[in-house]
Length: 369
View 1 (tube, rainbow, N blue to C red):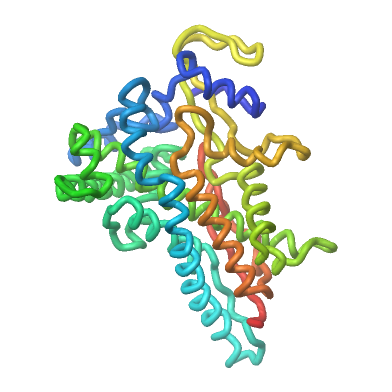
View 2 (spheres, rainbow, N blue to C red):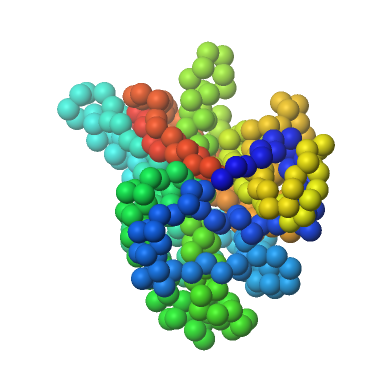
């Protein structure tokens, strides 16, 4: 697949506004062609992803977006804020205890290494998504494996052998979705409401397949990056202290900078529907473009630059405010509870997929104050 990259933020916004010229039909297709063995595994699982929300256009997209949007209204996001804070405080107590447990053998309080991606970032978004949507979730480690495997299968570059492993995981995930979608009929959960709105079982599963991932995994990745960059910056000479991010305004500004510079969802795709031009570039019908959502704003850009990380226009992420709020509160509460944190060990490995990125670990140590 050949992609024309569009990095200028204004052109990215223009492409997203021009919905007749640039359509999302390729948004959820795999980056590399799936091998025959991969397709057989998915076919046996009756795996199907008809266009519903992120990859849909026209009236179908608008009607489904209206239904889904009712689960993520500003009022509902505001109403769940204190639960996010409470969950953060709870996880941080466990993290502090884990950091402090190394002191007995070494005589240095807080001498144990803890991975914040594992102890904090991965835990909070799934709970919040389940509460907002009414969807029960599988055991956390299973959910995370399914999420990461599906991201790699669709947005990575797996060879045919690796594809087989990922396809088995995706088939398991899809099977779980089918069961939950069927059980939701007649209920006021997201899946139940989608059934009541007239969506087929396949359409409900298609929407659920990526919404379950987008609703928690991408936020966990954002939290990991925000924690990592916040602690890393504080270790530079003359930089503000990590503890300064306990102040709400500072935490919010930090998260918005991360969104503007290296969001967990840093690119998205569009297909060219008809011969057209964009920024002086001739684009024939059928071509594909890669919209770079993060990392290309000038340093003096307006404070709204972060917003492009969630898309623009008709397909802007419905969970934008939720994700920003969760990341901000986790950073704020972590800096307040553990002001003495420092990164430790080698540079972390990063998840690097076409549209997703984050440090895989955020290893820290530090004296518990």
